[in-house]
Length: 393
Image (cartoon, rainbow, N blue to C red; front, side):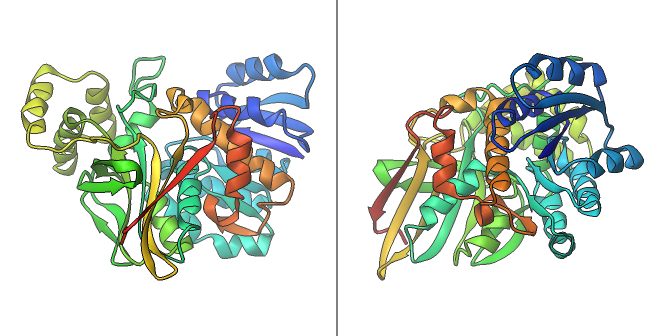
């Protein structure tokens, strides 16, 4: 198949391309990016000994250029963010072109809009998998492993680390400006975010504390953030209680983020200016955050990256924790790798038919979770640990 790696010259796109060229069934990869020179360098680096590689200049804001590139591809890997700006338009174009689609969408609002394209994708015979990265993506599949131990799921939480440990994610780009990841983060700690309460999808203020007691005696407090997991897990795994995506974060960082949230919501900052303050915290803001941090709860013994479910099995309450065996996971030290490799492993299951189902889907609806984690082991040694404790509600 001919794979179009959209945004493929960026760090995450390049990680996905490097993993994808080793997959069976990939005969050609087109590295498509606004920066043609960077795309050409990556294609040249990987050209020997694998599938055919080429570079193409594609700006996703140029509809004609995007349509032509998609029309010549069998599958597109879309790593162009932030997705709240570009995700729905690129997916709609892929459906028009009848091109299968995978992305890393980590914004909950466009996830809702893209799921609404399910009928169009079905009619076009297009399989689209949304959020096939680390979180969402790996997190969704951890949730699926936890939920399968239960007959009925009550509460369901996914969590990822911000500074426990340091994820290694770059907050600034080569030009010194705030990177896309930081801008995305500001979008998802402001306004309202999607959570599930009493089996209903609702919107609430972000950065709300959630205290958890998990199997293995692990307990602590994490904080809500806007991510697609509650939207998709609400549909696919149907928790009867509460669900949210959480940040495992130190008290000082959550206090600093809450200060940015207040100014974003008051219109004093936009996402870009808030992200710039995150990358280079002014002394005054840092001192204020330090004072506020004293009144907050910290992560305690929570693992850095996990999914946790409570519910019933055989009529008895049970709590289940699914997490990488490595603690902290080495994979998360390089966020480009942590997101790009899962995208390529999702592509592998689409190529061999495992995840081939027309429509727009979250990972947990079409990806074989057990196989995914086996395939991930070269990057995440030890695989996944699933622990249980009696008495979870």
